[in-house]
Length: 466
Image 1 (cartoon, rainbow, N blue to C red):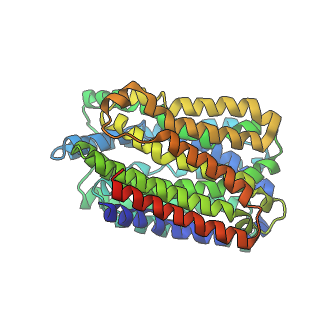
Image 2 (cartoon, rainbow, N blue to C red):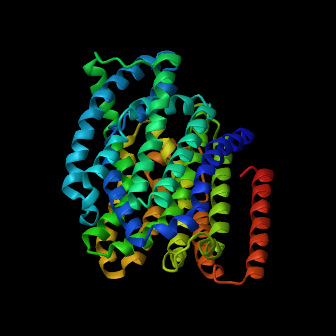
Image 3 (tube, one colour):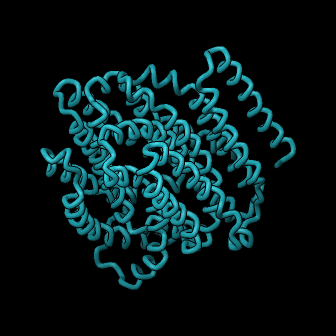
C-alpha cells in the first residue's frame, strides 16, 4: 500500500513538477524582463479569474467520484449525462465570466484588456472533456496519461513564456498567452481519448431529474471549492481594492508563486492518496488509512521545512531583482501553512465519502470567510504581512477544525493526535523563520538533525503501528 502511494505520488507529483522546476530555474532570466508591476498585473487578473473558476463545474466532480465508488457497473451512464449538461453550462459560464472580467478589470492593463479577457475565458473551452478524462484516470489509479499531458502542457507554457517575454519583449502578455496555449493543449488532447477510446460521449438529452438530484448534492460543495479562492487569491483582490501599489502586489505574488508550487505538489500527492484512502474507508481498514495520512504528513512537513530554511539562498539564486528576492519571509509562512492540508484531507474524506457536503461547509467555507474578513481588516493596516498571517491562521482552522465536529467523531474509525501535530507544525514554522538567517554550516547541521528526527518518527510509528 505504502509502496503504491509513494509510486503514485512520484508520478503525480514529481513528474508534473519537472516543468515547474524549469519555470523556477528560468526566474533569473524572466525577472530581468518582468517587473514587480508585471507580476502585480498577472496576480490581480489571476485573482479575478480564480474567483469564478469554482463555478465552472458546479461541484459535479464530486458526483463523478461518488458514482464511481457506489455504482462501479453503471457509473458511465451518469457520467455521460453530467458531461452533456456541463458542455451546455460551460458556454453560459464563459459568457458570464467575460462580462464580470470586463467590469472588474484592473486599469493598469487597459491597453490589453480584451486580449487578456478572451485568453483567460478561452481556457474554459473543452475543459469539461478534460475534467472527465482526468477524473477517470485518477479514479482508475492510472496516473501516466495525466502526467504525460501535464508535462507536455507545462513545457509548452514555459517555452512560450520564454520566447514571448525574452525575445519578443511581450511583458505580462507573455504569461497570459503561454497559459492559454498550455491549457488548450490539455483540453484538446482529451477529446479523442474521452469520446472514442473511453466511450464517454456526452448525452445532451439528459434526464432533468438526474441532473437535479446530482446538483442537490454538488451545489453545497461549491462554497467548499470556493474556499480555496478565498484563502489563496482573494488577498490580491483586497490589495487591489485597498489601493495597495501594483508593485507591492507583485512582491506578494512572487512569494506566493513558491507557495503555489508546494500547494500543487501537495495537491498532486492528494490526487494519489485520495482514491486509496476512500477505498480503505469503504473496506473498513482504519490502520491503513492512518498510515497513508501519516506518510502524507511526513512528506509535506519534510519538503516544506527544508525549503523554508534554505529559502533565502534559493531566492538569491533564482531571482534577479533586488526587491523581489527579499520576499522570502512571506514565502516561508505561506509554504509552512501547507502542512495543514494532510490533516484536512484526513478529515474531509469522511465528509465526502458519506456525502455530508453541507457540514463540510462549516470547515472549508468558514475558513475562506475567516480569511476574507481577515484580509479586509488587516491588509489595509499591515499590507503584505497582514495577508500572510491571516492566510496561515485560516489554514490552521481549515486543517484541524473538522476533527471536533460531531459528524466526524461519529463516523471516523481513526484517531489522530491533532494537538501534537499542530504544535509540531507551528514550532517548525517559527524555527524556519529563525534558522533561515543562520549561516551555511548551521543550516546543514540543522537539516541533518531534522532528517534524523523524521526518519526516527517514521520508524517509531511503523513499529508501534500508530
